[in-house]
Length: 358
Image (cartoon, rainbow, N blue to C red):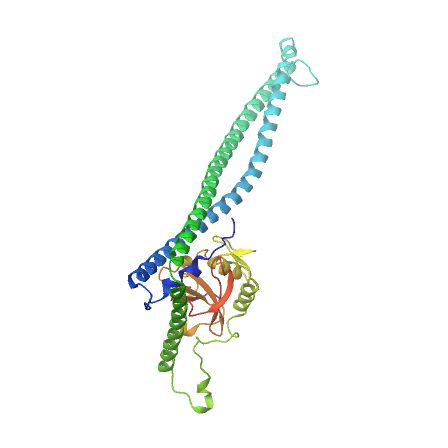
């Protein structure tokens, strides 16, 4: 899968901004652009989730197929050997009874005048007949198992083919959404684009200020000796704190800064937003679901004001983005195809929830 060259989320800044028309801006056109970018963002997020599901199914099928091929190979050898043995036995019997280096047991039995010899030969023939029947039954059972394994292989092959086709289709659809977002954004004037950037910065500052005010109103007034002026506009926690495994996950995530964003990937060279969270916590023995919509069910819920380093922070009403809180009001996340893995303010996108998984 190729790395997309332009950024979708970067173009979707309008999705989280309250548009204020400037003198040169058409309010209706700006509102229409916002609605389109909102829709594109949601549709792209759904494509991303579907792609991850297709990739997961394909990986599971590939693992099953690898084991099945080994079982199938062993079963083919087993059936072949049983068939060879049964054929050898039949040939030996056809050539004169099959015992004693080619001694004709049947002829010996018919020509016998001794009761003991006759009974012994009769017993030998019965034993050989029983052996042939048993070997044939065993062959039939093992052949049936071989046929079953071949049927399973055909089913998995078909599923794998369908999932690979789905991956290709979803990737192309994502590219279409990316191009559509670019077109919407390009229709905005340079002045409007700059205004959007400033409005987004203003929104982040106002949200941080509201959270700070809410925390101060909910907390006892500190005495002068406690350092009341040390509070910042960011959620609590410095780069310290968090469990040992959370700190290790942060270290892994930060080590990926600068790497690319590719939808549906979880490392080692590229990531999408949930893939980075999945890979970081996998390194420390914690298994997370694979998409942002399912990761929000992991661990325990925490408020934005109680964030600790290592917590997962979710964004947008549809839970279409996730990052990892690293302290000092910052997250690390796989942002978009244009930016890749970067750090950003925890207030850079509309907050939708947070979970503590370590």
